[in-house]
Image (cartoon, rainbow, N blue to C red):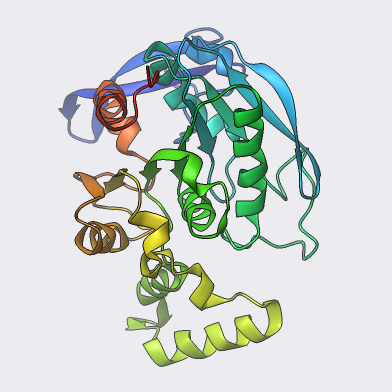
Length: 308
């Protein structure tokens, strides 16, 4: 809305093509009937809208300074929030009130190519191949501030960054648990899934051979490193600490099949909560209170805010 922001809730009534939903004003004034509005899965445009006071901090990382937000709480175990591709720190704000109230200090980070953060030397996203080193700097920052261990909460590509960190960082032993929201755990499978739903000519789908050829060309031109982006195949990534995955069954960006694969490969550590009918990163949107309770309940059992 021009000059305002609101949150849409549950469907209250359906009459023909008209749908009535609950409505919570977050900022601005209540619009009049007929006012044009834009829908966005991002819930908050500012942490204050969620009732969260953030402290701006700077993390010294491998490429320079990275801006981040800290929200203090009473516990000793910090949660580090890692956003996804084309998203920002604001997309992680939805989780901050519940984590704060449960006693977890939070560190919501940026990584290379984000606004205000250094640019990757290639100028490209690497889907975890290089960004994990930025997360490592954030983990080190939390430990230096007195954290007795960390929890990684990664959304979409942020889940891949967290998995790459677990597989490659010397600080992986400081992680108590992972919470992954619709995580990109196998970039190859994600690209294949998206390509399979793209028509080539009319009703003819893109054949797997053409996708495979395009991937070879992309690897040769941009050094994608497809094999390095299959975190499902790395036991150190998902098979060491407790992992909770929340993933929508109607996700058209990152297929839930990869999360189901993770739960099947690592039944001792990975628990999958499938959100029926939810698209990409919509589990919280569908049921904010339920999603928050699911995450904080998992953490209370597996990685308490205070180890003592």
